[in-house]
Each structure stands twice: as structure tokens, then as C-alpha cells.
Length: 152
Length: 186
Image (cartoon, rainbow over all chains, first blue to last red; front, side, top):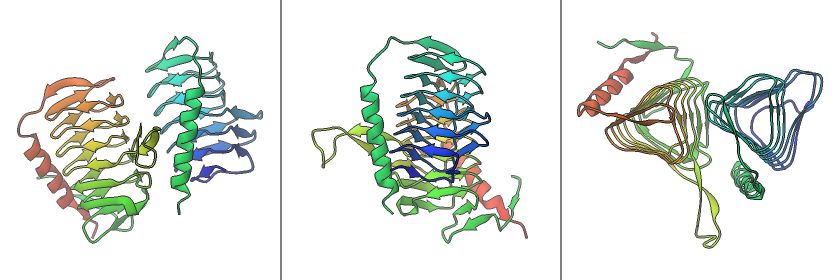
């Protein structure tokens, strides 16, 4: 069960279990579908759009903080997009990446696993680690938000 | 003489204690929000009171497109004294604070007579001391503590200067005049 507080077109957008989508989020899919995985958190003011005919897949355990903007990219699992980062069209992002506050990624980039991006567009790679702690923390956060949101 | 700003009466909602809230702002969880009085909230302000308690002082001015959201930590509670659990921290904003447009604020405490610039990003659990100024376009990383009477700015934000002793009085007069001059169109 997921908590959706803003208005989304449910025909074209499929949301997995345990997701928390906050107020003011715009998820726009004109022709192709958008499929969002389990336990993702999409905070206020985010903007996700799919302009292509193909479907756009966003994985599980991702966190989109306030004001992010994502267009036409396929995203893996366990990524963190901090406040107001902008990801332009036709990129692909793999697992366990982290994007700093206000960073900006130009179109048609491929970001491998475990990369870190800082403002304005510096990119580093970090040695691989086990992401099970991240998954536990995010599933706890989703449970807490779901409890607060469904108290009415 | 400050400029008189006239607003359309149909766009703002006014309560008995003098709080003027724009009808286009999104305010959630009003049972846990405690406002002292005489505050102004402009368009597209998002204020989440459902996560934790929000207590706001008097003469607060929040400009367009600001989001105010309480932050969280991992800590021990009475119900689970051995395992760490998510706790949402209350947000306290003191008197005479001005927050300019498009900022994102997830701090825990903002002191009196401070002014926060445009496009600022104040991350989780920050504490901002009194009489301080945060310049435009600055990013404060999580858990920063801004001491009293200081000017912070930059990306990441660092200590730049000390504010003069008259900032408290100037800020109080500026916001009292702003509220007095914010008048509906007749």
C-alpha cells in the first residue's frame, strides 16, 4: 500500500508498494508509461516527465528530495537525489548513486554504479559497499510517513 | 517612508490574530501548527505541520515558493529504548524572521531577528542563531550550527562576517513596517 498525496494520472503511472508521494508532485507521462518501484520517496515539488513512446522505469528504494526534476531517464535502485537537482533527458542512471544539492546533469550521460555527483557537475566514483543498511532505513522512513499520512 | 504594498483581498485569507495566508499556499496539519500572530505567507508556500509540531513567532514574512518542512533523526524513544527509531523533530521559528523566495528550509530552530536570502538550501537539523543573516544562494550542509550575530554565505556556507549590534532593532522595525504597509486594495 502506498501513500499518494498529490494528483497523478493512474492509467499511465504505476506505483509499487510502500511508496510515499508528497504534495505538489507532478508526474507527467504523455504516451509512454512510468513505472515506479517499491519503497521510493518522492518529496514536495518534484517533477517527473516521460516524453518518449518507450516506458520509463524508476527502481526501488530511491529518494527524490524537494524540487527535483527528472526527464526521460531510466533509474536503478537505492539512489538519492538531493534538493533541486536537475537530470536532463536521455540519461541512464544505475544503482547506488548520490546526487548533491543543485547538481545538474547534461543530456545523454550514463552514470555507472556507486558514483557521486557534486555541485555543479563534478563526478566521483566510490568503492562498492553493501546497500542493505540504506534499504532498511528507507523502508523504516516509508513506514513512518505512511503511519502519519493515514492517521486521518 | 517604506512602499505600501496593496494586495487583492480575494487572494488572501485573514484570521483573527492577523495572520494573512495566500489561498494558493499549501498548509497541511494545521492542528500542530502554532502561530503567535501577524504573519504573512505569500503564494506557493508549502508548510507541513503533519510530521511534527511547528511553532512560529510573530511578524514572520515568508515570500513565494518557500517550503518549510520538519526534519528527522534516528534516536531512542520511550516505546523502543534499545533500538533506534525515526523521530521527526519539531520546527521552531522565533519572532521577526524574514524568509525570501524559493528557499528550502528543513532546520530545527531559527532564532529571532534573522533574515534568510533567496534560493537558500538549509538542510536537516540545522540551528540558526539570533540576529544572523544568511546570504542569497547559499547551501548549508546538514547539522550546521550558525552562531548568533554572524553572516553566513557560499556553497558550502562558511562564516563571513559579524553583524553589527543594530541588526536586531533594524530587523524589528523593517518587519513591523512591512506588516503595517501590507494593505488590501480599497
